[in-house]
Image 1 (cartoon, rainbow, N blue to C red):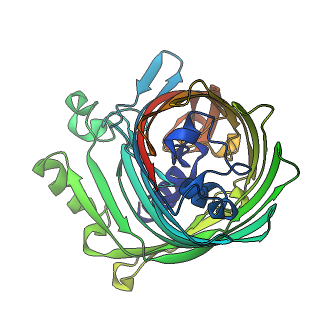
Image 2: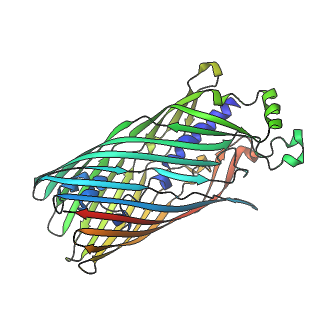
Image 3: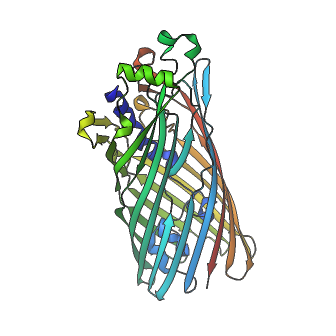
Amino acid sequence: MKKLFLSLLASVTLSSAFAEGYQVNVLSTKQTGMGHVGTGMKLGAESMHFNPAGLVYLNGHMDMSVGISGIFSNARYKNGDYSAKTDNSVGTPVYAYVGYRIYDNLAAGISLTTPYGNSLKWPQAWKGAHLIQDITLKSYIIQPTLSYKILDNLSVGVGLQIAMGNVNLSRALLPVGALVPILGADYQDVVPVSATLDGKSKVKLGYHIGVMYDVCDKVTLGLSYRSRVRMKVKEGTAELDYASEKIKDLLDATGQIPPLDKGTFHAQLPLPSNTTFGVSYRPTDRWELALDLQFVGWSAYDSLNVVFNEKVLKIEDIKAEKNYKNTMIYRIGAQYMATDRLDVRLGLYYDQSPIRKNNYNPETPGMGKIGISTGCSFEPYRNLQIDFAFLYIQGVSRHGSYPDKYSPGGKFSGKYESNAVSASLGLAYRF
């Protein structure tokens, strides 16, 4: 049981954070409306996320932008006649950017974003409860940035990423109905005991660099690289929740459940690198078209080591093989200036899944996802914009399996489906 618990802990703690569905694509309301393109665009303060080289092209001396999104997501599992559906809470990623032009060729800024985060909640007593019941992930990155214009048509930028975050999850330590042979049929829908794990990462550093080049008045190219960051949980904690005192006494007598609530664990959690090439094209003064090609270095997540700090507990260290594969995200978007006060946008993207078919755990219902978006900006007063965006994400349904000693054939298999909608609101002001 001890080895089983840590093996499942290793599979849950990180992969839920880094599936393609959890790399948040709503870090600018404006750009969400365009499929979240932006590497080859001059976006003012918001360039700090997409390409720091674009920050130097501020319209004015100072540019500020803030926003929040509501993400409503769900996933469904099917296997034969059985099905289960998540009941997720609303995700609320936020962003804030402030940019300042120091000289005509030099700008600085600082941003706060939540690039990873999600909430996933399966029924507490579903068939996969011993793999995952629920998880909540939050992450925050603060990025001070400098951008320098080398030539009128060439700029570079660099940002320091200061990353932090936390994760909370629950899962059953025994399958639903595991005690039926001992306690009878009345316990066939009972989860004997669940563990709730909580981990807070130490502050870790990364970097973000970019270059931007105007080929001509109508075409701009951009290239950015956001480094991998290795998050570290130093003293994660666990709590045990028994279905009843009777079950607690029974399991205590057998010694099956290790004293997880009396110890702490540590682990390193890698955030993948992102390399993005972007191009924008302005055929007229009112139209702007953009394309981004984003390479995500998921292969950095090849394994996860989880170690309990208190050796007296005699819980074995675990190295969980993950073997993620690198992926691409393809994005296109368009913006049209309908009037002097109103811009409208459309966007589309396809996000590949890094998860291999034979290592498909329900805590990570990852699959290729198609995102379709629209949005607009309205300027009620000079230099003040109100931004709106709507994004619909449809997962490409996928059948997968995961090694599991409690399932027939030693695999927890099934078909997974997912979708999500997001509504975003932003405010931008410059002077």
